[in-house]
Image (spheres, rainbow, N blue to C red):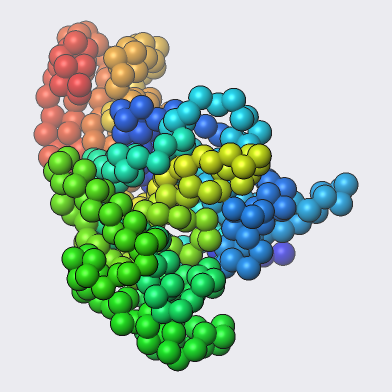
Length: 427
């Protein structure tokens, strides 16, 4: 039997895990800086939860890509395809949660969909959500916090922003009352372009006149001010007003790397207002061209899960960890092969080197001791293969002089230092 990975999944090698852990650490630090609390929900959900009204719903593309199975009790279960529905389910199970509830969650999600660079069947998402307020300040904070993460991760991105109320208003003016299926098609505009979207809309039963009405307003480069003159729908006007307020808040915080995109829809049925996506500026050939993060406002979902006619507004964004890692791996950070900062090589001085290595660790310096009976050259090769930046060589002569020979693996330079000097140098 030949061992193979399942299609659409991958092993995360140590060099990639170093990047992954770094990204997750930056995220946690940024999220908690903005006052968000950690939450963990299960990977397995009841299928009816994911298919519930207010969730993905039965005819959504997301639900079509859901991994479904039964347990031994013949209960229909599924692997979660996102974290937002699980958040809504959590709040419905914990109705006394103090609002507004600001939470972040990082975990695996699963989608049985097309495979390409930056898109896998098993992937990590990292979500931030604010539940319990309809203020555009919450929308602005989500976008600002997402931008803060990308800045700290040294990723130059821009945001596309739109509002589903505006999109619904445009569809209403085109004579479309039930907008859900049309939204799903319009969300594919940047992939299959106007011709493909028109064909899909016609297949779904919309008329040529309705398609013309849609694309009269959903066209590349149309500005918010132009739409403000053309939109007659009250819902559409409300969407424009919310966008204007949001952009005012973003500008007040110095956020300028965003653009209004009237075609941005995001396919999930639960979005009710702001929608946003983050894209890499000028991606290299091997870097993902799709969004690195996406989300928006979903004011109806949580209330539908809780029941009782309760209105619980919410807004959030989800980061795609895999495409972010693909970008960083393609850059210099892909050369990180070890978290070790120094390898201590004993030459008939094992006990002393164990004490020195532990002293370094207690000072917060990632350290390891060479094992086995390899000579200096073999240990230097080992350090070089893992890009360990420093090596400490400790022989009997060094111990008599109360010194350690420190070798810089990048420059090749060497110097004799005391343990205290070594710690100072490395820190």
